[in-house]
Image 1 (tube, rainbow, N blue to C red):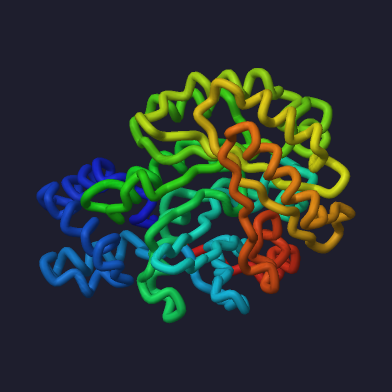
Image 2 (cartoon, helix red, strand yellow):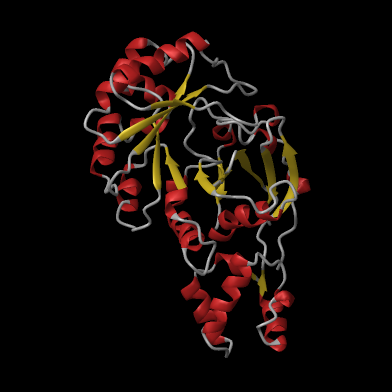
Length: 353
């Protein structure tokens, strides 16, 4: 038995035709899965009853289970989703006036090993399949706390999206296409630690989603200390790929910069940041570090945060201080994964045959 949401539309059309039904049945099924967010084939009333029975025997609809919903004091909601093989992944829903953002995970754990990130402590368990990426959205929309309110998506959850390239691209096509979840690419942001070959490849996919680069340092020495990926793709190579990325008119790349006390928050760091981003259509998100268990890093003082921002302003660089949400439930930037350490082999969900 396979999960139907792992199939792209053209793949589902082939499967349906092999079962003796016309290809347009796949488009009907897609609408039920993504636009009506159904959980059962029996609800698909424009599909012949006999064929619905066949579908129930061959496919499963949901790839994940909601194991827990944790509501923060600020209204954010952290979802813990169980996978079919017993892992737990996390997503975060963030309400802000009329903007409702879901932070989506792309892997179970992460291999990047960034020093400031709780997810990296897990290591990489496996990539998420397209259906598991998409289902974070489908299941969150069903939540009584979310009430179908998701306007924006950010691929900034657990994992490095571009390290799961084929599955993330397949998922984004389902998310953006007319028969799928119908999200505008303008409302989707993909964040990467800087896998340069995949970044170049993404520029030619035609997806036109927003791009965010997790930068966090202005010298190779500091960035390699914080982010081991920099040893393979150093700043010069990464920034060259960013300058060559085919941006639509009036679009900018967002550079995320986690401010860590005594590591990367000095006035010289701010001046270096201005220098290395010259010639790049850029804006900067300054994210004060969010503490999590086992870290020795600290959040800078408000004075240092504001001084850093002011230097960027003085040099005509757009810089926004992003106050993290959901910190009290471990849902803030860099905190995802802490709930997953308690996974036990003997508590895994058995895999369905």
